[in-house]
Length: 258
Length: 258
Image (cartoon, rainbow over all chains, first blue to last red; front, side, top):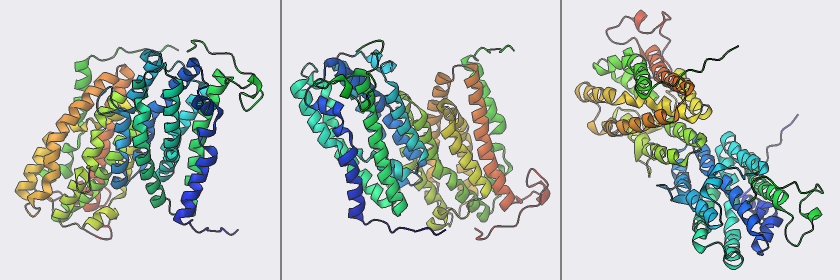
């Protein structure tokens, strides 16, 4: 049996492959996000998204720490470390997690019900845990590549911010601090992650692994929205039977509606 | 079958149990350390210790990141995070790893041979990797408890600093920056780790786990010195057959002697 060792892609081809994943699989294409951005979600649906997405936010520092825990290079760890304090803050009530809690409170959720995790859907839980497990178990350059959804998030984030300011005015503007901060942070983080991905994924196998890692991460974000759409759909303007990608009936609402 | 649920130890008993481990199992009692502190090691033995201990230093940020990666509490992660930048530094040539490299260079080792890892003994490698694996796989409060050897290190460190200044004067004083920095950092870190251990190990099972975790960590440090003593012994003033804890002959020196 012969093994064909493929040449590494050149820089442009590699980056184009990564960008192509985002164009086709990033969750800006998901019906739930599209309904959100055209102002079509009810307050209950918005709250459901906020409280479920909080579970994702909560786990980001653990994901980033898992990357550090697998990375033997101080020069890479020094670049990556700020992500943890960006999210956790230097003090209580600072950082991304605290900002997301403020969004939740501005939407009418209590801090207690958000932190309790009782509204977190199983599909969201599984997706988030798959992401943390990926960072724990995969080579760190692939876990870095899985973060590259940040390349695509500024566009989504500015569209989302405009939608919240226009359609969801029942959420006070101070609640939107998280989105504003990420508009600044995400491009810087994405540039850093892209540079590390290109620098350390130097074989074709690692490059293909990076593309797959990014596709996996898109699946994580996408399936979180699937879970939301199943539980809180149908979306306005869409008949129940097309609200999700299968013809299964929308499940009964959970206890403790939002 | 009945299960006896034991009452948790009170604060004083728990702390006394932890301290008792250090009194009996910390590596200040190891013959290699004792020989170091009475000025009895040759330059080659000192260099062997420095280059092998570097492998341990290199892995400390990965161990600390593994604790963060398993810890769901932002308030704990905020307390623990500085350990990573203490070691990695904010910039190149800062932090504990860089300071240890300076010690190595001051002892006559080249930066290249230290970073290459080629002098690292198998027993040292296994011990260090066991420590990182412990932090990755065990509940985070137990991994925190395993750091409590810091409770005992300031005494050893000041004794070591005095020994280096008195006996190993062929190492320039600037090489000893790491030891001086740790004299400040270790008591603060130890107090923090002890407080977290007491706060989060609230069942008898977790308390006993913490005591075992600290004993395990003492074993890590101890077996690193066993490996050094086997490879670079016998120690001055000790006949070859008592230089190690078994009667096996001292193995042949490695290639690339120090």
